[in-house]
Amino acid sequence: MSTLQKLSLALVGTAVIFMSANPAGAVSLTKGNSTSVPGEGQKTNTPGATTIDFNSKTATDLKGFATYSGSNGIVQGSVTNQYATPLGDNSYYLTVAPSGLQNIPGSGNETITFANPIDYFGFYWGSIDAYNYVSVYSGSNLIATFNGSSVPGASADGNQTSPTNNVYVNLLANTSIGETFDKVVFSTTGLAFETDNHSYKLASVPEPTAILGLLAFGVVSAGSFLKRKSKIV
Image (cartoon, rainbow, N blue to C red):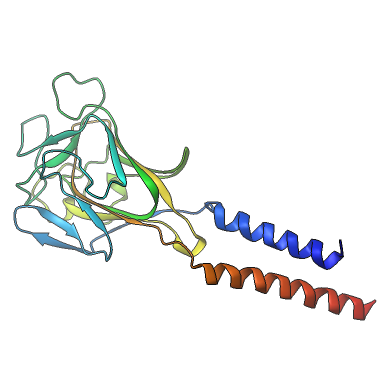
């Protein structure tokens, strides 16, 4: 096998690894990009996103890509010392309480697993507390963890009536390096973590023509490199 063939195969292998691996990066948290819907709080404006609003009283994803496992504390309204409805939201929503609390809906973590990689996840976060946590994973690898204090402008003190403490937040993968994630975990160390209108967007898959173009570029570059090297020698 010639040196050119070996180098070309090496480039192809490198490209395949690059395309199949989930590069390390940092998921970012932003707020906004949402619309207030009367009686249902904030909903995302992200194009192509699928929304789970819990109005069926279950954590149901009609497209079948998202699976909820955990306490599934889906409630409506407020109960003192247990949970509080997000501002302007009279519909059903998800609440998570610390593990081990008897007779309180949503006690324990709530895990959302996606059948396919996603690059966007958003939710309406009610009465934000510093002890509310959302963790983002790719497989078993923890990519990022945020708490209430991570939300720009939020007091993160559980205020139930402040618009700055009841906001829509967005978790964004670094798509410039091909980053994706496939699991989101809600947890809290205090009462409670209330969210609604979960939204996600499946990660885009590179077009086959783009992949072939990348490989062709690698092979041509390898040939040019060897030609230049032979001339020097």
